Image (cartoon, rainbow, N blue to C red; front, side, top):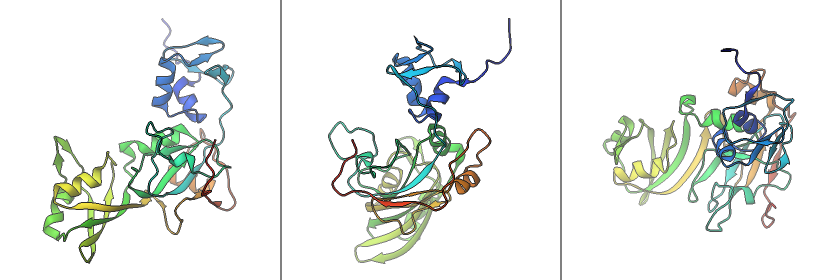
Length: 266
């Protein structure tokens, strides 16, 4: 019995690198019979492929992978972070500039949240940045209704348990009281579904504005709502510790573009 490691990379990883979908989504596409290799439909992701193999998705030959790229996007209120919305609501991807390539979001911001959203054309970068083991701090400016004090916020710093779900300790700073509302700066490392809103409710506070200002080393800074800025290839390489497998595109100057107000991406 041969113990030699098959040449190439797993098919789902190759699909993710080509920007077809995240690795997990690619595995579901394979199981649904949507992917073929060298003319044969496959139904299991347990397959290694090399550059010589011909891969097709839904009958269309897969294009060669582009260099990995990363963008900062200031997500406005009222957009959902999904490719398609069953309720017909506007999505982040509907409102991106026309010249943007196909991209995926790194994590999500809900419809009532705004601020920094990372976008990438590379499924492996998406996966790497979303892994809990990456542990990047995500910071938010949060406005809550109420008059919090240090004693009220202390349970959040220790880590709360809600409905049997353990939340990791948060970094919480009380910035100022402004009438009936207070502003907080909150740092989290996991980004679970509605994590900050649920945690605030557990100590008697209601979030009425939530703005993400940073994701690891990447910051929103002065980026306006709806604007996109591409990260320089050198910065991408340094911050993500990309090895020879990744060859980021080099951009001499970050490109900032305004999202169109009325045009929707086709």
